[in-house]
Amino acid sequence: MCNIEAYIFDLDGVVVDTAKYHYLAWKRLAAEFEYHFTQEDNEQFKGVSRMDCLNILSKMIGRSFEEREKIELADRKNDWYIEYIKNMGKDEVLPGFVEFITEIRKAGGKTALASASKNAALVLERLELGRYFHAVVDGNAVNKSKPDPQVFLLAADRLGVAKEKCLVFEDAQAGIDAAKHARMYTVGIGRQENPLRGADIMKPGFEGLSPEQLLGELDFPDTPEVCNV
Image 1: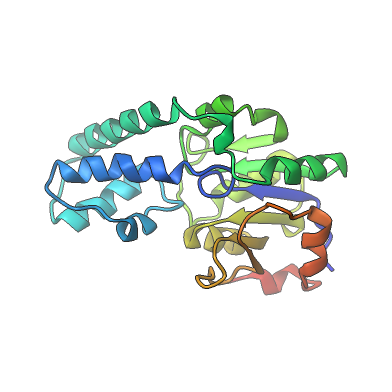
Image 2: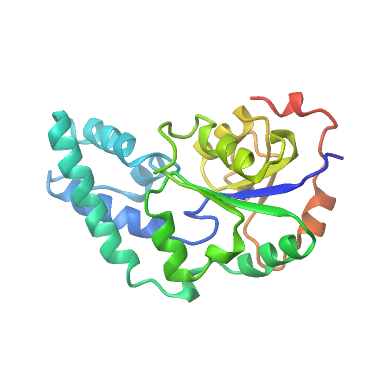
């Protein structure tokens, strides 16, 4: 069994459901171009940076934008998103997460948040979650989007833990791919009927789950090489 020393969490859809606020903001922006932005469209945006999302949206609506326009549109979307998350409460932390990460820290495990969001610090402040993480790496600290492994490799570096001893929790395919490119082990958060390709195990969430139980269910290979995609 692989010796896990660090637990790295994505933010949206793993720790808190801010994905719904991203969806509302992108939907609002798309409506300005008379495009009906759906939940299915939004799946392509999970774990992806703001500007890359805008490039995807540009293809959806069949319109190209100059760089200046892209920045203006991305900023407008972000302003709406911030409006939404400023009204968040602690009850929006996903069930079982606080209990799960508390057990990790009591057992001496290291924890990090690794998110493409540039507003991760604001979300953590609103929900009073910052104290649970030894390191936070967000979209302000990296210049490459998932599935590039940069955000996870930087998180491991800040924790001082070898990448093959890290376990990543992700709800998006791009995130799972990024973690596997980083040669890290993965837990896919989501419904079993929609598994994330390459995830070492799928879990619906943290409610009723303990770190000890999770590691007991995982059949890790002894060598990190087989974690490659």
